[in-house]
Length: 242
Image 1: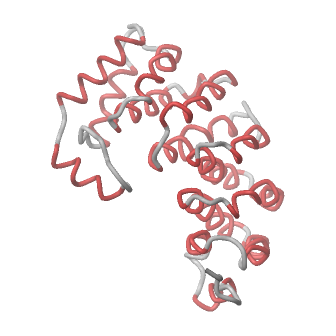
Image 2 (image 1 turned 180 degrees about the vertical axis):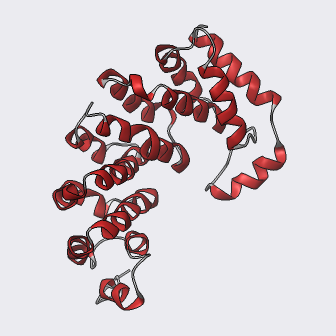
């Protein structure tokens, strides 16, 4: 199967299983327009399993088909590209990492696709020792905010396997503490919440450094699991001047 044939097969499957009721149902999770066919996650996962077992579909085929799918207007086409890529995770290489990095400029434009990358796909490159954390440094200043968001989300699995790295990662992630974009605030806040579970003392010390200057949404996420009296420590001492 050629990359073009794979893209056509995915698009045809999506059109055949379109569900307007699901589009309305899922749209509440997305800001702005949600342009989708309305496929459910189980439907996509089942089709990915079928495609994975189809003769002629390799990681190279998927990576070659991915740009057209990721650039497509409909949400599920990019989803299929990501899920199929993950199905070949044991074959990942440094070249695969560089290819995936290029997708953000093509069409990674929502939190769900960014988090599929950060939660599922990108951690494999760290855990399989294909790249190091340092390879993500340029992403912290990427033009695409969803690429910036993907860094802390990716590091969640890394610190769960390597809790001793938490302290050294705070300076690495400093730049995101004043990022201007809400979706990035959510990503770094989520990371800090998970870091706090593993090393509360170090994480709280880091948060205290930023409590007067960082967006409050970061703290909303980071402090979510704390007791009320602990959360109170991270309130700003002075209201933000408008």
